[in-house]
Length: 190
Image (cartoon, rainbow, N blue to C red; front, side, top):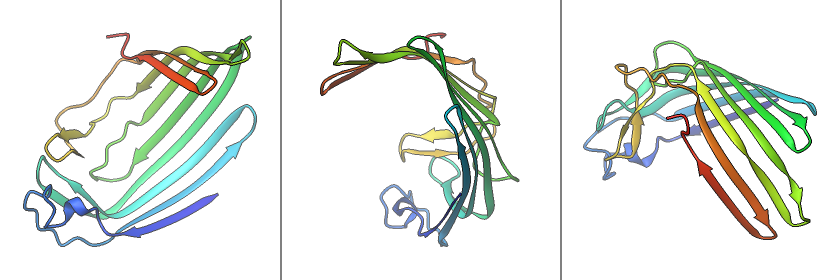
């Protein structure tokens, strides 16, 4: 069981004298972030339940306008992870996440997210530590944030729902003594 509470001033970008604030003069209150989580582990799987509560969440509402959400923002997550040996050096890693926010707030998350990784891995030739395989990720449709390249910030939007096919990637990761390399080919299904 983990309990964590952080009471902090909003980031400097929301201050009036920041060059990236675009003239927003907010009278911001301190943000309060509370995290409560519980985790259960055994050799086969890991379960995690987590609740994140945020008050006075400061964010951008558009490309240049900032605001502070004065209500309570709650994010509840349930995560299950497993590692199953398929055969020999072949393993299947599975992650499942169910999450939801409450009420009408500026944070958008998909209801369900999963990541499946089929990996051929092991130590070969005494010095070669190898992991290679396929990585598949999927999430349910949701209204993802928009992005402002000028300020380098994400902000909520309600016009476009992101609906995607599973994202398939192939990776080749190895280490020989102190040399490490990673080659990854992403979005193979597009």
